Length: 412
Ligand SMILES: *Cc1c(COP(=O)(O)O)cnc(C)c1O
Image (cartoon, rainbow, N blue to C red; front, side):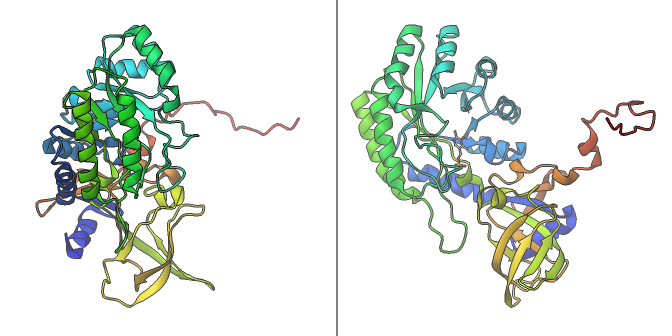
């Protein structure tokens, strides 16, 4: 995809707009698969919450991926996209027993992450196999908000509660078919994975009917030139060795599962926005774009870095800019960023906009959520239309005659 292609997309579909490159998604999927070619049974379950457009889900399904879901709605979307129920795993946190029952009725795999629900579900449906989410208490992840394995984390069943867990399994006679962990996002250090895997293997020995061990995700992807990323190939060779040794000891060929979100889609996505105003102040130069944290919240939410390029003037002289949005409160995408000289009307592209960007977009300031385009085999395919005012008002109830008389403020 060249700058020319991107500018054409912005022209055709309007801006701002999200663009995803199917080839990059496929490359990442194959890279992860190849890194674990030494494992007999490998299952990748794409984490739908990263980017849940149904066309992306269909692409994942066509690649042979399964689907990791965290809400009943994502389960339903996955089924609509054509995933077989057994290829969907439901990994929620803190949802009601009813929601888990609903997912079980749809035939998807169930992953339970607390003892209260485990006991209730096991008592009611002892025949439905469940996977358990373990918290190995391994500190990992790039930011405290996305690091979920630490001691104060709300995720998973603590390894210190294994005795209680075993008691529940014994008393309810339920079946445990998988062990799962997901320790956080942006894990750089593969030793964290390997160390946590040892804890999972130890835990797994307590269960005799396992089909799979799921190592979650959290692979770090590069955000800029020269950035370090999780060494997938090294992790592949080291974890494969440990996993195969464990299967031998366990006496059964288990499936090794992962549920990557960011790794598969982050780099495939770009977000295109137009510069409305270049504003020189006494201390900086602001480039104000026709978007804001309503469309891309990650920089404001957890300080994520998105490389920004001016594709309208790629050869220009670099200058320092603060790139800001139009939302009426602090809305900063980047400060002191070197970008080739910006003129009003230029199109900027934000890199790494595939994961947790569109899916976190909102209608704040009553703005429309942008269109999404898939770049597939050299062509732009519209996969979501830009919203219109109808989308903003369609669920609002226009109550008639509620304020028929002129309301007066009464002073007491
Ligand atoms: C969000 C999530 C993932 C995906 O994490 P990435 O960092 O995007 O790869 C995987 N598993 C679970 C349970 C999740 O909640």
